[in-house]
Amino acid sequence: MTGEKNKKKRLNRSVLLAKKIIIKDGGSPQGMGDPSVYHAVVVIFLEFFAWGLLTTPMLTVLHQTFPQHTFLMNGLIHGVKGILSFLSAPLIGALSDVWGRKSFLLLTVFFTCAPIPLMKISPWWYFAVISMSGVFAVTFSVIFAYVADITAEHERSTAYGLVSATFAASLVTSPAIGAYLSETYGDTLVVILATAISLLDIIFILVVVPESLPEKMRPASWGAPISWEQADPFASLRKVGQDSTVLLICITVFLSYLPEAGQYSSFFLYLRQTGFCYSPKNTCAMVPVSG
Image (cartoon, rainbow, N blue to C red):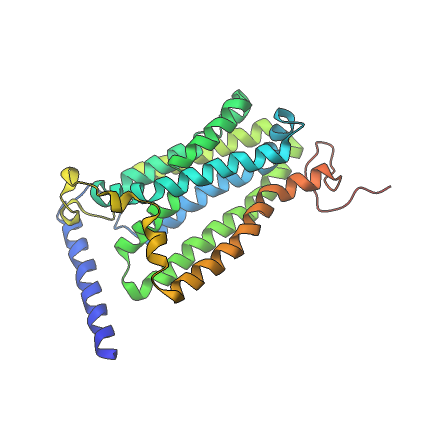
């Protein structure tokens, strides 16, 4: 058993070494330096930090746009986005295997952040584009593929943990910063700042992020066919049922994230509606209104 593990480690090192040699020989366009987990970390942090800043302004716009059905529309908008992401994620992943990770990182970040400036231009278009952006809002799928390209198998769980921790850190810090800026300077400044951070993320991908999957390592470059099995979002669900351990893990994760997702999307909205959010500009604060 130990011999097989050592053999796998040596094989992974050989594949990674081959990729590095191909990249250095000009096998694919370069950014700055060799591809690393830190490139993925920065991309994820900037994207979700920008969205976290909008927590308070989004609540205001959502309530002003749908005053009678605020909770319902909040659920529908995020629900449609989630369903579209589920349906498109396998196809985006399969296409990135053929055309490279960098181009799809750029595509997913651009369309995920595209609704941000619309918040102040047209709220209706803002919420419509948020829903439709779910088709490309699968940055995590491409980021995990990027990380898998540049790490050995025994290093992968640590790298995935670092990416997930960065995602959590961005969402923990940015809503508080956004709420403070919204209260002090107004929602417009927060939207402008979030838009600027999104543009910074796009520029970072264009200029700094190197391709992790060299062209010589791809199936057949731009001419490779994509099978329906690769693009079928339900194929992985069918495979899950074939292994009882994996099935139990998936059910546990699903049941764990299901209430958390609903809580995250509605918690601040509930606090405001029930009078637990108070400030001169209706910014959420974790204290009840007295009297």
